[in-house]
Image 1 (tube, rainbow, N blue to C red):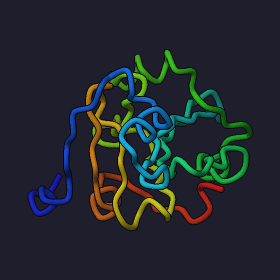
Image 2 (image 1 turned 30 degrees about the vertical axis):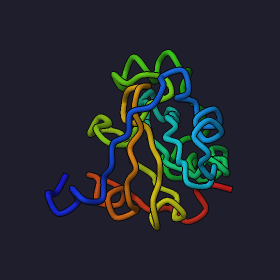
Image 3 (image 1 turned 45 degrees about the vertical axis):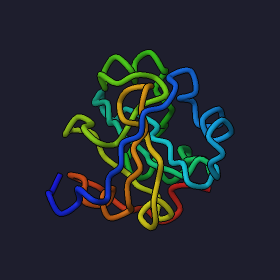
Image 4 (image 1 turned 30 degrees about the horizontal axis):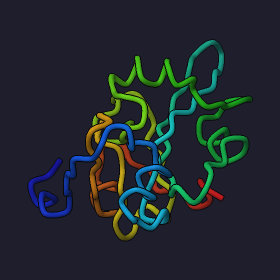
Length: 150
C-alpha cells in the first residue's frame, strides 16, 4: 500500500463475537450501507480454477451467476465454502478482506465501493478496517466493475 493512503485507513478493535456484518452494525449503531463484504468466488475452465475476491456493499449481493461468471470466463461460478476461503486466504471467517489476497486472484470491486468509505474485514474477527474507495481501487489488480452487485 502506498504511504499516501495511510490517512485513508482506520483500524478499529471490535468484539470478535460481533464480527459478522449485521451483528456488528447493530451493536455499534452503524449504517449497514457503510459496510462492504469481501466474498470469494470460483469457477473452472479447462481444469483451471479461477478465483475472484469480490467486494460489494453489505446492502447488495454479488451477481455471481452473470457478472462474476463472465469476468472469470467460466461456465459456472459459485461461492467458495467458508472453510476453504478461510484456509486458502489465511484469514478468519468474518474478517476476510481484499487487502493481502493471493496475487493470482482477481479482485473485483463494485463501483459503489469505489467511492466513499467502507468498513471491511481486517483478516481477523477482532478488528475492522475503515478504508476509502481510493484505497480499495489502488489495491494490486483491482478492477472496478459496474453491476458487480445488485
